[in-house]
Length: 222
Length: 222
Image 1 (spheres, rainbow over the protein chains, first blue to last red):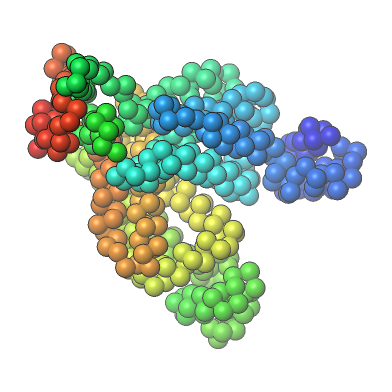
Image 2 (cartoon, chains in turn blue, orange; image 1 turned 30 degrees about the vertical axis):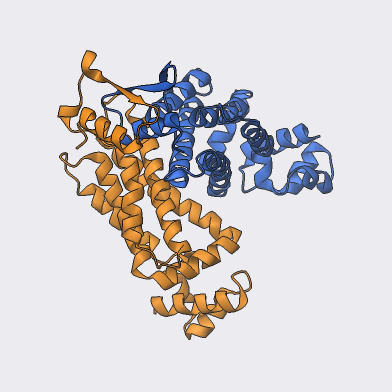
């Protein structure tokens, strides 16, 4: 029923245009009542993005299942991959929707609000992980925005290739850039009995704050 | 006239609520006709954000006036400061609007679309500056998003302080974080080959400041 409504809606959006299609048109084509439509979708916009609520719930569950050994930036990158996978599951549908969204300002606004919810989910997780650290909230917000931007960059490239390119490779590359900028490298630790020694290896061009952050966590200062 | 319409609108939004106020109510209080309202504002949402169009135009002009010697990340940070300055020009109004926007989902959506336009303006500038570089578009998009997130983090802190805190100091701090992560380093710090890596060995019980001092001198950050 739900899939039939989505299929009917997209058929009409492509034939007549999004604005010219009413919910009545959609339910008539799908052969169901209006009430059935609104049981699945709060509004006409929602039928365009039928999987985001599920994906947001999956992302929240994924982040909730983290433990403290997960490197936080890697974890949010992996969470972002869930969104890309949702798009890549159904390339033809995703490409169709991409073209539709570009043409209809109302859908673009809807999409911005969805993207914002993903970004908040990532930021909330990072804020909790960085709690008590200096600039924890700032870092969380900036990293979440960077992850979302990198993800969307890869997603748009893939959509513009009509779903032909390798979506996973594109997102790995894009997220790799963010991890290089913000992720912590696993420190190499040498311990020599009671006189415990920490060895930190850093790239010479690494920003100082990142090196300090790594040492802070190694020395147990935070 | 324009200012009178904004003042009348906010008086009514605060008294009756945003949704309960019509354009007719606003023009009646301001003592002008409907046509005057729509000459200044395309919709009721626009009267809530009367200065964004001007600020977007200022930002575009500022970025357009850059020359190739401007460090690109610094330039977009300076462009973002224009937005903060617009808010800080009128603290009472900005704080009022912040409270209103939090309560009205339609305004929140409008605000997201404005933020998106600022982000696109920054990204377009960076894309042009990074043209021909490897991953130029990816870097441009990620850095623009990071700058906007840092700016908004500082702006929100300032709004939550009821406009009492030092807005400029907050945004300098937040943007400094982004510049440290993404800004171009002076050439003498960029090296290739075996000198690329710094190894720091510290006792676990060493005071953090001493470790940082040592790294600073190793990295040449001071």
